[in-house]
Amino acid sequence: MTSVMRLNFRSILYLLTSISFTCFSCTNFGNKSKIPEFRDINPQEYEGKESLFFESDRQPVTIKIDQFKDMLLLNLSSFLDTIWHVKLSNEDAATIGTINKIIFHDDCIYVLDRYKTKSLKKFSAGGNYLSSVGKYGGGPGEYAEPTDFVVTNDEVIVYDQFNVRLNYYSHQGEFFRSKRLPFLFFQFRLFSPDRYVFFSLDNDNDHLESIVNYSVFETDSNFVIRKKGFFREKDKYNSIFIDANYIADGNKIYYHPPYNDTVFSIGSDNRITPEYAIDFGNKKLPEHYLLSKNRKAFYKVSEEEDKYAVFSGDVLPLSDYFYFGFTLKRLRNSCIYSKKSGKLIIGNVLFNDINYIFTFSNILTSIDGNTLVGYNQSYDVVEPRQRYSRERFVKDIGERYTAITDSIKPDDNPILLFYKLKDF
Amino acid sequence: MGRAIRVISYMSCILLIISLSCVVFIQNDNLNKNKIILNKNNDEINNLKYLLDLKDTLSLYQFYFDDFNVKEYLFSKIETDTINSELKDHLNNLPKFIFYYSEIDCNSCVEDFVSIINEFKDKISEENMIYFSSYKNKDDMYMFKRINKIHVPIFNLRGHEIFQKRLNAPFCFVIDKNGYSDCIYFPAKDNIYVIRKYMNHIIKKHFNLHCSC
Image (cartoon, rainbow over all chains, first blue to last red; front, side):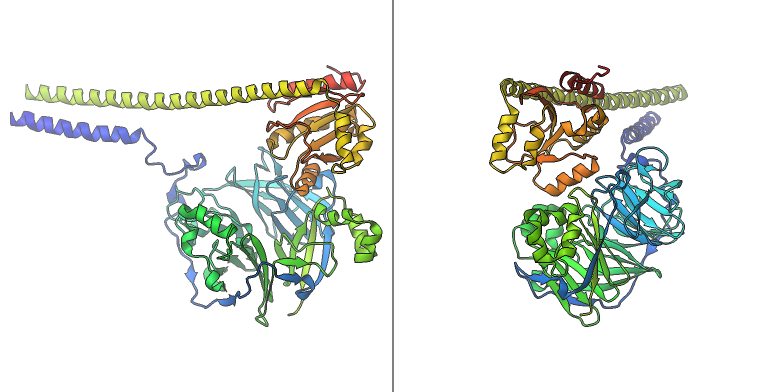
């Protein structure tokens, strides 16, 4: 009797264990990846040996903003020395929609249009079209979207987010090889061929527990994670990605955690250093507005009210200056801080009193230390000219600049603009 | 005896587990299949709804088009000086093939159709094509023109749309030599063959050219 009871008890135990096993095996409980491409990724190959970036205890330079006005008129001549332009050529192969990133390398300009033409094009310093690096498509050397790219001395590396891979090309655009990636990210930089630094924000990297809650991580060329930093719990905060939050500058990367008031650098020594802290005083946005659950309140407070300054990103370090922007009730304020004098120039209505025809907009990068680089769409340059007679235009801005606007058609390729900062 | 009972019990347990696994698997599989079927059905229902809406709108447009002199209508708008007077020159030399789209239309539908229109540039001749659109921001209009390699003007009819009721779908028609509209057509993105047939049809009917249709 006892043996039968023991038998039944054991059978029931077997049965329950087996049922539990069966039930769990019929679900996707164990597979955390939401991305089918990562289902066969073995996390052990990529994580387990990583450590945190070192943190410097250096104090950042604090920039205090004390002017918050609806109308802050700023003449470009108050902080710019000269403005010059490069027209990108207009042949069919050179067509660009909007520009997301520019890299200057060996007297050439690489221009990325991530969304409109989904292309990466190479132009001469004078704006003549030279070649395309890869193209939109599904074949070898093609990409579904050129999400980001870097140019090294040997090659051009294009990140295709949709196909989760890096494509490697020669500087002339010849396809070399592609590498499958074990994780997703937004942007990347290379310190050396064996040192990649990635910027990821709430990407679906749930299969790699070590990085899913970190915004920046460093790997070797096989994408084995070595360092990580900038903890940010996935999906906890508003995830608004801004290109200009992750900037390579020589042997440093500048990183601005979205909406944080501090801009950090990551050095080649794996050290995170707070570089600039923007002090918005009583206009500082309280952190609870940044939580995902308070998204509606955030949009209300940032777009309809002028209670708080929103510092989403848009930063650019220069040799002697620090350029950044913030918004107050949707109005964009441009700020240029001089490292030498500590002076801050700020404005939200910018008037080009240097050559009148270009606007100060779409700032993307810098060259030669103290020259900002941005672009204008051709229509924006031509449109004011269309409103007036030529005589009137010549009288107001002179023959030289009228002739420049006359040479531009509204559907021409975008115009690159170089804004050289002056000493202040 | 006890050993036999134990073996039978084990066997029964294993059989029970296998049966249960099969039941769970089949249920799970059926559930997934049902979900797929449900999604497909929903897609079909949405497609049918869209087609019905399209049919209604088309009937409405054809009703308007029956006795609708587009040339006169547009000239009256030009007089208000809100539409670029360059259009007047274009409308003085009819027939014209018109492609009418809005910036809120399905972007890939518009771009795919424009790429097919570009194939017929030689047969219709670009000066016989007019693009009408409705853009809030002219920057976007010029960018569209540049990206899609359109070398003729796009006229922004914002505020003066020819039709009050608009589907979020691009369409095309021909303004015949008397200024009246003809051959209204809503290109379906996935049916390239029919789009090409339509283009050949209007070329034959309005542009006096021989074609393979």
